[in-house]
Image 1: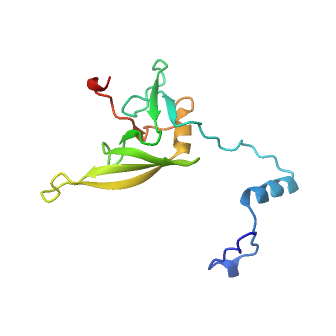
Image 2: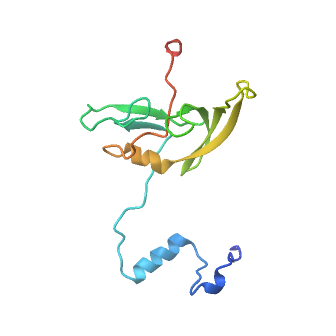
Image 3: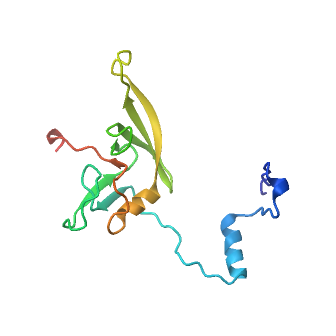
Length: 157
Protein backbone atom coordinates (compact mmCIF):
# COMPACT_ATOMS: atom_id res chain seq x y z
CA UNK A 1 0.00 0.00 0.00
CA UNK A 2 1.35 3.42 -0.93
CA UNK A 3 1.70 6.11 1.73
CA UNK A 4 -0.71 9.05 1.50
CA UNK A 5 0.43 12.00 -0.64
CA UNK A 6 2.61 14.54 1.12
CA UNK A 7 0.89 17.86 1.59
CA UNK A 8 2.78 21.17 1.66
CA UNK A 9 1.98 24.82 2.34
CA UNK A 10 2.30 25.44 -1.43
CA UNK A 11 -0.47 23.04 -2.53
CA UNK A 12 -2.96 25.86 -3.17
CA UNK A 13 -0.54 27.57 -5.57
CA UNK A 14 0.19 24.36 -7.53
CA UNK A 15 -1.22 23.78 -10.99
CA UNK A 16 -0.25 20.13 -10.99
CA UNK A 17 0.65 17.63 -8.29
CA UNK A 18 2.02 14.21 -9.17
CA UNK A 19 1.96 11.39 -6.63
CA UNK A 20 4.32 8.89 -8.21
CA UNK A 21 7.94 7.80 -8.25
CA UNK A 22 9.96 10.59 -9.91
CA UNK A 23 12.03 8.19 -12.05
CA UNK A 24 8.95 6.44 -13.41
CA UNK A 25 7.21 9.79 -13.99
CA UNK A 26 10.13 11.33 -15.88
CA UNK A 27 10.63 8.18 -17.96
CA UNK A 28 6.99 8.32 -19.07
CA UNK A 29 7.18 12.08 -19.70
CA UNK A 30 10.31 11.73 -21.87
CA UNK A 31 8.64 8.94 -23.85
CA UNK A 32 5.45 10.99 -24.33
CA UNK A 33 7.45 14.03 -25.51
CA UNK A 34 9.68 11.83 -27.70
CA UNK A 35 12.83 13.11 -25.98
CA UNK A 36 15.98 11.06 -25.69
CA UNK A 37 18.09 11.94 -22.64
CA UNK A 38 21.48 13.39 -23.63
CA UNK A 39 23.43 12.10 -20.65
CA UNK A 40 23.80 8.71 -19.06
CA UNK A 41 22.70 8.27 -15.47
CA UNK A 42 25.35 9.09 -12.84
CA UNK A 43 27.40 6.05 -11.94
CA UNK A 44 29.55 5.76 -8.86
CA UNK A 45 32.79 3.83 -8.42
CA UNK A 46 32.28 0.42 -6.88
CA UNK A 47 34.02 -0.74 -3.74
CA UNK A 48 35.45 1.36 -0.96
CA UNK A 49 39.12 1.58 -1.98
CA UNK A 50 39.79 4.13 -4.72
CA UNK A 51 42.82 4.62 -6.95
CA UNK A 52 42.65 8.38 -7.39
CA UNK A 53 44.85 9.48 -10.32
CA UNK A 54 46.86 12.70 -10.29
CA UNK A 55 46.56 13.59 -6.58
CA UNK A 56 49.36 13.57 -4.03
CA UNK A 57 49.22 12.05 -0.54
CA UNK A 58 48.00 15.37 0.92
CA UNK A 59 45.05 15.43 -1.51
CA UNK A 60 46.35 18.18 -3.84
CA UNK A 61 45.78 17.76 -7.57
CA UNK A 62 49.02 17.31 -9.47
CA UNK A 63 49.84 19.19 -12.69
CA UNK A 64 48.63 17.56 -15.91
CA UNK A 65 52.21 16.92 -17.07
CA UNK A 66 52.96 14.79 -13.98
CA UNK A 67 53.77 11.17 -14.86
CA UNK A 68 50.89 8.78 -14.25
CA UNK A 69 50.52 7.98 -10.57
CA UNK A 70 47.60 7.31 -8.28
CA UNK A 71 46.92 7.90 -4.61
CA UNK A 72 44.98 5.16 -2.86
CA UNK A 73 42.04 6.28 -0.76
CA UNK A 74 40.67 3.59 1.57
CA UNK A 75 37.14 4.37 2.77
CA UNK A 76 36.15 0.97 4.14
CA UNK A 77 34.26 1.08 7.45
CA UNK A 78 36.73 1.70 10.27
CA UNK A 79 39.38 3.29 8.04
CA UNK A 80 41.26 6.30 9.38
CA UNK A 81 41.10 9.52 7.37
CA UNK A 82 42.31 13.11 7.73
CA UNK A 83 40.51 16.22 6.50
CA UNK A 84 42.64 17.62 3.69
CA UNK A 85 40.97 21.01 3.28
CA UNK A 86 38.69 23.54 4.92
CA UNK A 87 38.44 25.05 8.39
CA UNK A 88 39.02 21.72 10.13
CA UNK A 89 41.94 20.70 7.91
CA UNK A 90 44.15 18.17 9.69
CA UNK A 91 41.42 16.77 11.97
CA UNK A 92 41.47 12.99 12.10
CA UNK A 93 38.42 10.83 11.58
CA UNK A 94 37.07 7.36 11.00
CA UNK A 95 34.65 6.05 8.37
CA UNK A 96 31.66 4.87 10.41
CA UNK A 97 29.20 3.83 7.69
CA UNK A 98 28.39 4.00 4.01
CA UNK A 99 25.39 3.92 1.71
CA UNK A 100 25.31 3.57 -2.08
CA UNK A 101 25.57 7.39 -2.26
CA UNK A 102 27.79 8.64 0.56
CA UNK A 103 30.15 7.82 3.44
CA UNK A 104 29.60 9.00 7.02
CA UNK A 105 32.84 10.00 8.71
CA UNK A 106 33.22 10.92 12.39
CA UNK A 107 35.98 13.44 13.03
CA UNK A 108 37.56 14.65 16.27
CA UNK A 109 38.34 18.36 16.49
CA UNK A 110 40.93 19.66 18.99
CA UNK A 111 39.33 22.34 21.13
CA UNK A 112 41.48 25.41 21.70
CA UNK A 113 41.88 27.54 24.79
CA UNK A 114 42.97 27.14 28.39
CA UNK A 115 39.76 25.45 29.50
CA UNK A 116 39.83 22.87 26.70
CA UNK A 117 42.83 21.06 28.18
CA UNK A 118 43.42 18.93 25.07
CA UNK A 119 39.78 17.89 24.79
CA UNK A 120 38.32 16.95 21.44
CA UNK A 121 34.83 17.49 20.07
CA UNK A 122 33.37 14.88 17.71
CA UNK A 123 31.47 15.87 14.58
CA UNK A 124 30.23 13.93 11.57
CA UNK A 125 30.33 14.79 7.90
CA UNK A 126 28.99 13.07 4.79
CA UNK A 127 31.27 12.47 1.82
CA UNK A 128 29.27 12.04 -1.38
CA UNK A 129 30.45 9.32 -3.73
CA UNK A 130 29.88 11.82 -6.57
CA UNK A 131 33.00 13.63 -5.30
CA UNK A 132 35.03 10.44 -5.66
CA UNK A 133 33.58 9.88 -9.13
CA UNK A 134 34.70 13.42 -10.04
CA UNK A 135 38.17 12.87 -8.57
CA UNK A 136 38.70 9.60 -10.44
CA UNK A 137 37.83 11.11 -13.84
CA UNK A 138 40.70 11.78 -16.22
CA UNK A 139 42.44 15.01 -15.28
CA UNK A 140 40.98 15.09 -11.77
CA UNK A 141 37.73 16.93 -11.29
CA UNK A 142 38.55 18.39 -7.88
CA UNK A 143 41.24 20.90 -6.92
CA UNK A 144 41.83 18.97 -3.71
CA UNK A 145 40.51 15.74 -2.24
CA UNK A 146 38.36 16.39 0.82
CA UNK A 147 39.96 13.57 2.83
CA UNK A 148 43.09 11.42 2.65
CA UNK A 149 44.31 8.44 4.59
CA UNK A 150 46.95 9.33 7.18
CA UNK A 151 50.54 8.61 6.23
CA UNK A 152 51.79 5.35 7.67
CA UNK A 153 54.70 5.70 10.02
CA UNK A 154 57.86 3.69 9.50
CA UNK A 155 56.80 1.49 12.43
CA UNK A 156 53.61 0.44 10.70
CA UNK A 157 55.46 -0.90 7.69
